[in-house]
Image 1 (spheres, rainbow, N blue to C red):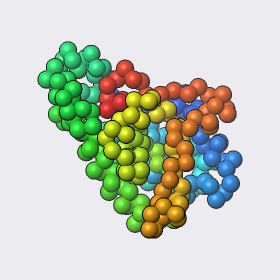
Image 2 (cartoon, helix red, strand yellow):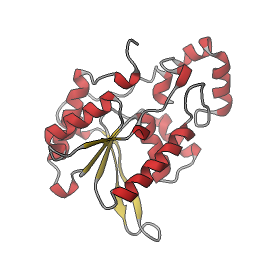
Image 3 (cartoon, rainbow, N blue to C red):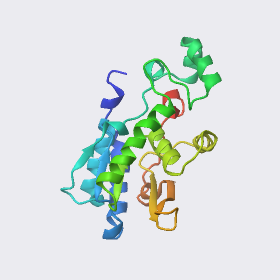
Image 4 (cartoon, rainbow, N blue to C red):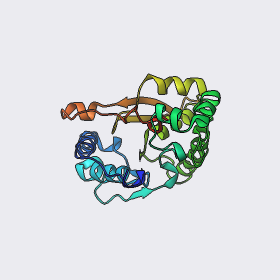
Length: 219
């Protein structure tokens, strides 16, 4: 690649998908639309948030707040390598990953899923502290979506990896939670939708997923 992953912009199709997402939320009741916009600092995530807001998904002057903790998983020396590429070019790392599993394996210069989960726990604390009772939307990446599910739903390694194996998270798909006062002593978040692509389907916009061929895209 000629640019950093963080600097890769949205493709024309990606812009259409973001616009469809914004239109879909624009048709929702006012009390269902997001009030707080949080974004990964990666260019494509920020552009998605901008287009979403401009398409009516949120109030036009609502600021988009960057949070570097929402960035994609760091893949280190394995960044951009396919699984066969890892086996051929980094056989030691391939063997480590096979033994440890993707949840715990950390490549040199990279992160494990546990590392991502650790930084996301602090994101959840920040949201609870500053945005309690507000409707928050997060523009982020595939592994982050899965790791947030792990945290919010108190999943274990086996459960979250089974969800991962079931299929990629679609670009601009909706995963959302609602507050349920009956959950626990003080209420809690309950999964309402996961990987929903209705916004694109309603506008006949092609649904795409991060390429499975790139090992990094699946962690």
